[in-house]
Image (cartoon, rainbow, N blue to C red):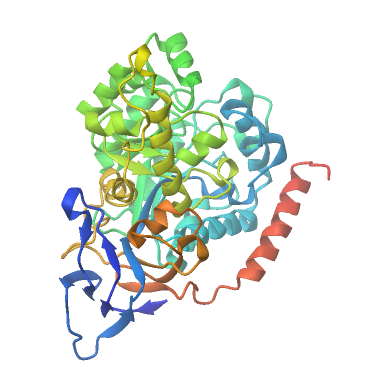
Amino acid sequence: MTDTNACLIRNAQHVLTGLRGVEARHAGPDIRVQAGRIVAMGALQPLPGETLIDARDCVVYPAWINTHHHLFQSLLKGEPQGLNQSLTSWLAATPYRFRGAFDEHSFRLAARIGLIELLRSGCATVADHHYLYYPGMPYDSAAILFEEAQALGMRFVLCRGGATQTRQLEADLPQALRAEKLDDYLADVERLTGLYHDPAPDAFRRVVMAPTTALHSTTPEELRETARVARALGVRLHTHLSETVDYLDAAKAKFGMSPVQFCAEHEWLGSDVWFAHLVKLLPDEIRLLGQTATGIAHCPQSNGRLGSGIADIVALEAAGVPISIGVDGAASNEAADMQSETHAAWLMQRARKGEQAKPRYAGGTFEGGADAATVEDVVRWGTAGGAQVLGLPALGILAVGQAADIALYRLDEPRYFGLHDPAIGPVACGGRASLKALLIGGRQVVTDDCIPGLDMAQLGREAAQAVRDLQRRAGVRR
């Protein structure tokens, strides 16, 4: 990790800013960074003592902001029993079956792998919806997450998950799935807030109140209490909602209303709230989310992998919902990085609109959905949108005065050759464009696609052994 408190990024081929409209691109070609901030953009001359970063043939983006993850799942990719299951059966088959098999070593290793995967895609900020908690847990998993993010120089938002009640599918599962008491859960959120939470607009550490699901993890009265305690502590709120039709059925059966209406009744809407998924929404729910400026973490690859559907991001944004992007857990997204996630978001919004096309003889008015989302839209969702839902306004865009979280991509693989507009390459072409450099708060944490001190081959060997250990502890026969 290199401290580049004063540096000049020179001769960038293209600069995307994370802003809207004509401001989505900047002519560059240079960006000056001092004391962790962008202080100038344009045609600039080097200053004495300034570190120079050569960005020739590079595309420059704001560093990605991932607003929903489950890092512990980084050792559960492609798990066979859950591979072809939809959400509820997948939960029982994979994350719930294996969560009791994690010890401190495997948990730390999983967090490290997930963070490194994100970092190498140009991601600087990670919000982890961490729900692997149970009474008597023998290690402090929150401390591990903050430690691993700090070691890599990343910004980390702990969304402290947990449950005070369990679903029927969990009833016969082990200690690692037993519910916490509400007082214990709230006390731990308060403890973590005191230890880690920084309210600064460019904070490296944040804590969020994040019961695992609004409908299944607490009682209605407890859900309301979590909202009130969070706001008294000055932290934001996050949970899963409306990922599949099961949420609609459960809310109707248990509460006689829609999931979003239920959240509204229990003080869980507002500009300090964002939900993961929101795939299955009624029109009235979209309007209510927009009216309250409640945000979304859109997770297209996980939603596709689990067969949940495609969230209507275009309609949500038109209604006033802040849009961000999350990779979700690697157990339902075997490519849990922000470049592949934004590529999927770009394609799936177009496919979603195209599915609605009808022939003209049946009243159709358009052929396809290629105008549903531009690359610039997706970059904005994955950067400025993430900063908005996390309440980190100094992040997410490339502009004078903003934090210097900057990704420089080299388009030096055949998949990028022949591009008429190289600026779109990191999103439109899929795969992973290599990093010339990644700056987080002005510090260069990736150089020429390498993370200082990382032995990738050794990490792979450790991961393979950890998978074998998890399988053994979970009773998997090989």
